[in-house]
Image 1: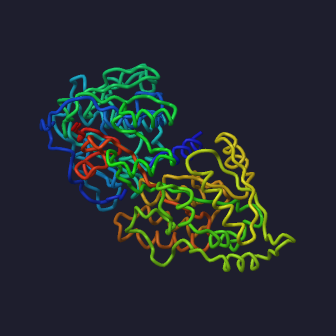
Image 2 (image 1 turned 90 degrees about the vertical axis):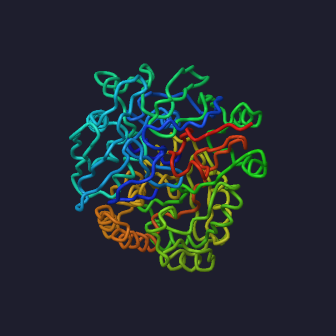
Image 3 (image 1 turned 180 degrees about the vertical axis):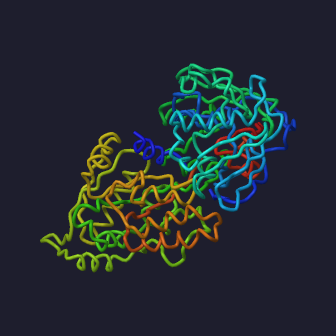
Length: 526
């Protein structure tokens, strides 16, 4: 179940890790009443009903946006993929990288008026560990949490772990009140109303209709301008898009269907701020099955593909052609020497011949089945890939299936030759290990390289970007030779809003202060 959750979540979500440094910058000054007035109601689209009101108990993408507005974390990630302060106004990492000390904002209150203290942080993190919250494996290096005083939290790690801060700032790590979620209420679904410290307070939930929040005037950061924040639940994407066009939604709340992207980009009354996330579409192979056990065959497929054309024909504005083996979001770690192969069809044919393959009567060196599941741009990408591979004598049969069938055939049974994944490869560059490391949760293709595993291990234990860079350059070198995956496109997030919405989480004024979907900087100016 953990692998299933990780693989699926990677398709839906989307930082630059500042390990060893004190945090700086914040969403408003501590305790200030800095709401700008204006009032009104902000309506945002939501694609389904929440399954839980404790966002640290389990994965729940339907509640994730609302949770960012109800709850706070110690630290969080903004839409620039940067770690920024939240409940912790600053933090320091010990020289050996095994102890992190967080200084908390003072006089913070829970929505029910009870005081927030470091004991709530300890309760939350201990509960994630003891009750197997979704983030338990991400925070596996956490050894002990102590609260020496009400405004200080110390986390001791079992080993230096440069990925830890990123995961702590990312998903299912919201701090929850012990007086609400203690006892038997930790994972009570939606039976217990959520109480947080965030900019908005829970007001009402109507199943299948909406989740309504109201402004928290006691918020320790930027107090919202709007009076109410409503997440309007619409399970049909076409209905949601039409509601947005009709003005029933102020912010779409999700990425638009590819068929609508260009019209939204061209509409002067709609604001779209494209952001590249460390999330990618990539091809991978069954390396336990001939001839895909030969690097030359995998490299031949890479040289036969033209990512620019794939993005142009299949992504319709929601992609950026991949040129690197790790996400370009982590610019500091990129290698100029080891990049994704360019389009060289003649070289592809030569590599197929070097692998011992010869063309049949139809001129095909190889015939294969490309298994993929429905969703996103998968089918459109696969269609272009099929066409491009045919140009070098690789005959491709597409097999499109639902996710459950794909998971059983590809992930569990490993009955495949070529497949494709979308994947969040963050919140730290080290997350590439989950794809290509021998023990990686999403490595179901039978790939293992001890040298790559060692580079990944060393990269995680170093505490500065300068120290880490050589190890990730080595990772890219090995990937360029072994070609365990072939990156096709970066995911470009597009969350449209009507132009009268100012201060959305991707706007210049809010992006450095807010999480992915926090709306406390939003103003409605009609």
